Image 1 (tube, rainbow, N blue to C red):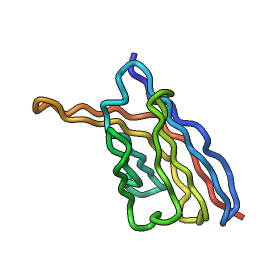
Image 2: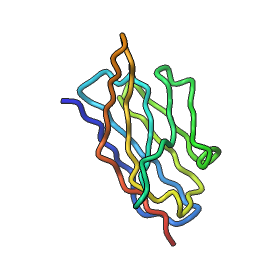
Image 3: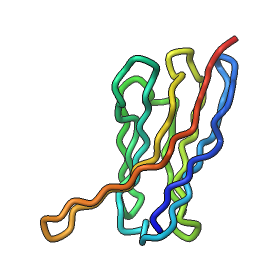
Length: 120
């Protein structure tokens, strides 16, 4: 059974930090690019960050560059999102995504999401 389970969300004040975790099971996550997306109330889901299979290449949406860091530990089948200097506009449900394209077949998995609320 394929699963992506996010954790680490919660309520934090502006300027605070959180670390999200996403544990993969039921598939070989080390062969997938791993990403974080988020969806704020009334808005579409947006890309936040991605890390490639080997873990040496990352990319971020401009609004989080310099504040968020994505990393992976394939020994633990886990991807992380370290979020610093949080802003009210970072409030959203954060989703973990695993994706790969092999032999012309695209595969993607999603987690259920974890709520991040930034408020004073």
